Length: 145
Image (cartoon, rainbow, N blue to C red; front, side, top):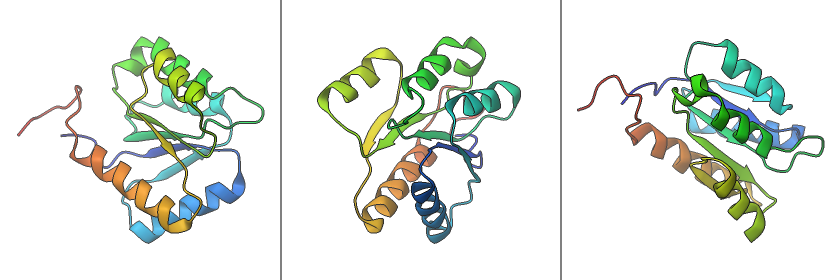
């Protein structure tokens, strides 16, 4: 296992949702730094300019000014970023059969989660997502037990 201390990139435009996510990280005492990008292109720019591998990308698919599939497609099409094997999940209140099917069919995401309507549900989901990836062995791992 590796990079359990990497940053978590959160792509979200809604400032209320950003505040909730920041509170969730604080309440869960997560050691991962949360980096928030309201614009997909800035998240992609961070990924291309930084050598360090993020731990996880969480993206809301409901962007008013951008197509969030664009980030996933950019990640999937960039060979240097692909080598980092960054887990990429959608965490969105916007959900439908077409949206989910398109997200999995168009590029390699590792999960799609519906954002809960209560703080407790969001906290529980984020805890489960982070714990899952902390326990997961990634293809880019430098050592295996």
